[in-house]
Length: 118
Image (tube, rainbow, N blue to C red):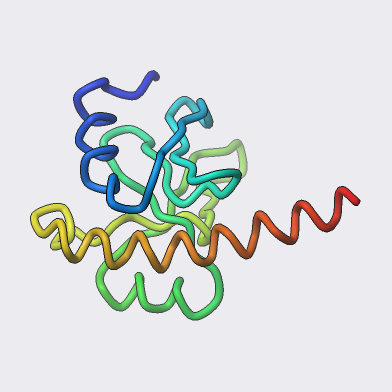
């Protein structure tokens, strides 16, 4: 399923203050990148944010759910992609605050990936 163009525009506008955002197709949705760091993904009608370690717990405390998908063995959750809290969808400042935190985790993950390639 492709990402709805209106939803993509909404997300790009929401996160525009972070800098130039590029996109790539992923899991039938769209990954949002700053440089080589994927900080968010649009999957279905949900914005999922990159999170590691303590940030995962912060998202969960705010009511976020991890991305999950069905397999033959049942549902598989990906805690590193967690939904943007519902309250942030109505509050651009809150959304941007979460996005900055996710971008920091995404940049750390991208740096690790670059280091492994060397």
